[in-house]
Length: 375
Image (cartoon, rainbow, N blue to C red):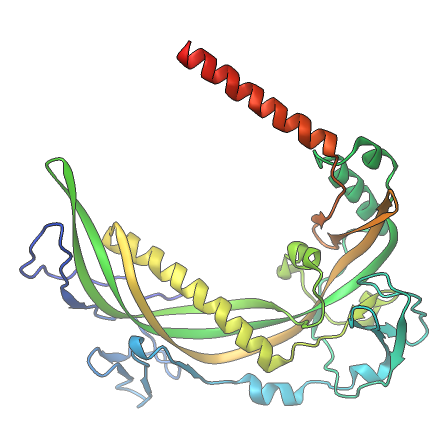
């Protein structure tokens, strides 16, 4: 990852210190921005925000921070046209009338209920020859049996759950499912301006001096993950969907034999829009930390950024999850177990008696503390 190290500390101009914020204009010199064509050092003009390679002639204009624009070079526009788009013709597609989730099964499998909500109101839909085939898959590492044990352990750890529920509730309708994800890689170059604050003690008060900086920040984003579904609203799926993608395997139908696979309903372009929002947050946080560290700043304020995205590539991958439900006093609760890590999330019944006893215990402690402090 290259992020423009060795940026020199600016020479101080005449600065008045005091309660009132003042602003000093300083431009950071970029010393290690590399040309994407020949890897030579690019010459950066901070006034025009043009970046030019003196060796191969490469030139790039970076948007000004105040413009808040994105510039993209989308390699995946051509790449996506070369991917296999006939996966749907070899699968049986099912749509749920209750929650509208779409899933894919092997043609020989039968689907009696929706893997997301458990509804039996499922119906087949016409095969879609434009369904992209996944390039990679994270295989299941947690078996059905172990997922059930993890659920039981999770439920026992729910403090406010009734003891009867902890002892009697059993997971039902376990469904193994592969979830769709897009991952995006990209080189980012961001122009920015920012105010950094530096505190200094003067007598019994702290005085902050503010300085204004402009510069360019570069970072490579590797495997920005986006859940490729618009229809699935199950919050527990999102809660457990953190995977180790270093264990990604090239797609092979043997990995998903016997399991359903959710059909992606968030397209590649829409997924990229989501990814950019996540990337912007990551870049802002990383740059803020870098500025604090490099300049020993006490405050970072008014950070404006505009980002260019180069060499955007993508992968379409599948990752595993177990979904199930259980009943207590004729009410149904759902939960999910990550099929790789075993992380569990879900809903559980609450014992009103336990809640009341906890509140009374807290009140008793507060009364005792008050009595000891003021007797």
